[in-house]
Image 1 (cartoon, helix red, strand yellow):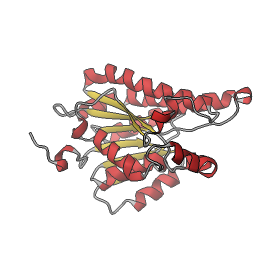
Image 2 (cartoon, helix red, strand yellow):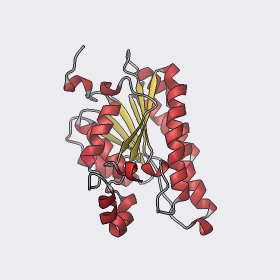
Image 3 (tube, one colour):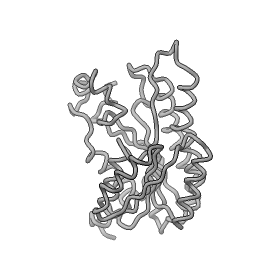
Image 4 (cartoon, helix red, strand yellow):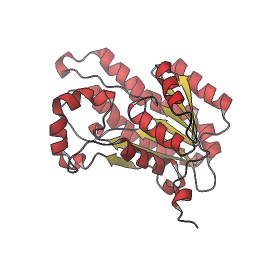
Length: 261
């Protein structure tokens, strides 16, 4: 038995897929994995953003490979799974991060805003995971299983002041789906956990930072927003041997904000 940090938290040589990996929380996780020696495939509808990030990370110990995919469309989701399966015989880490929000008052909220958010935030998480089960199972080595990391939100744990009903409902669904998948995929030696972020500086939260940034800080016990290194540390834990006995967990990373709501 070794308690060496280099062994417990290492992702060197692991293969990961991070959906929505070119910006925001997905980019934070991608950088953490590539900097620590992982081979990371990233997807986005905007392949240029993926290619730009891959170039930026090219001198780090790991590697970053861009693939264009709109995961709200089943045919593109299936094509992505087939492409990863063609290139790799195992996948150690799947990070289901791709997502979107749609803010509008309840009385005028459109069907399109409901369907688009649910298709990307929930449906794609289930079906991409389903199609990658063989690769995730193949990555299991002893007690160190394949990993699925789903990105939820504290918006799925409480009712906030923002009117984004489909986003909040979708993240609540992702949180519970993570528990369901943890129980169902254990037979194939795949661990499933969920990260529930609070407020991090991303394109999705730009409007909140501009209008409510100080209020969010004041309401947060730690009196700040999340930083990329905060997310990187949790992603490295969940993607490495350090979390080998962790599955079905929902881990808040919000500076304590959820405890005050």
